[in-house]
Amino acid sequence: MTIRVLIVDDQMMVREGFSVLLGAQPDIEVVGEAVDGREAVAQVQALRPDVVLMDIRMPGMNGIEATREIVAADDSSKVLVLTTFDLDEYVYQALRAGASGFLLKDASARQLADGVRVVASGEALLAPSVTRRLINEFARVVPSQRAGSPGVGQVEELTDRETEVLVLIAQGLSNLEIADRLVVAESTIKTHVSRVLVKLGLRDRTQAAVYAYETRLVTPS
Image 1 (cartoon, rainbow, N blue to C red):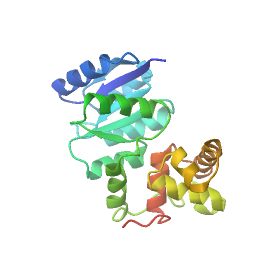
Image 2: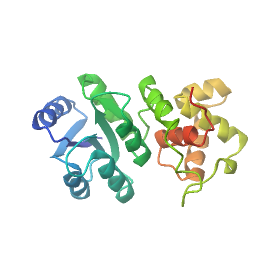
Image 3: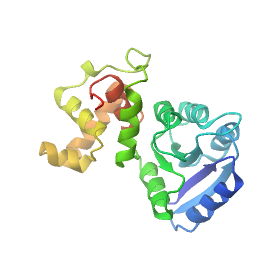
């Protein structure tokens, strides 16, 4: 199936560049562009893209606020945040708001296309070590706002195995890597991951990783 993408950036050259790169992919279609967060929210409602490439720093409504509104209004559109440098607290806040991962703006065409595919498939773009460093860095200084929040479950609701899986998710392991570590079938891990997300009221693996760090289930090094 073709992956429908909305590109959001206040710089026209950036939007056009990403549009050309992604438009060259046979399985990706750029369905629209937006110049700020407010327009992005409106475009998501009108176009229903599979993935939103979201610049984080824009005048007016920034990428954090736009991500929060998009995630709250539409569970099908995934947000992939774009940033110019990796250890960006704004990006961390966007991940907390519901973004499924992030890419640097200097990513190669292959990295950009692969990132879109990963997020569109329902996975979180968590594998790169830089994402784990980002969560690790800011989870130490940002107080947890999840524990006790409405609609968010507690770690105590998880079984021992589900807790173990959550810790490994936070360490950036894929389902296959977790299955190998725990010596079980990958399908079993997928079931555990789904149950963890449902019990904790989380959107995806990135949210699970943020939760694990902020509740100190995983201690930042």
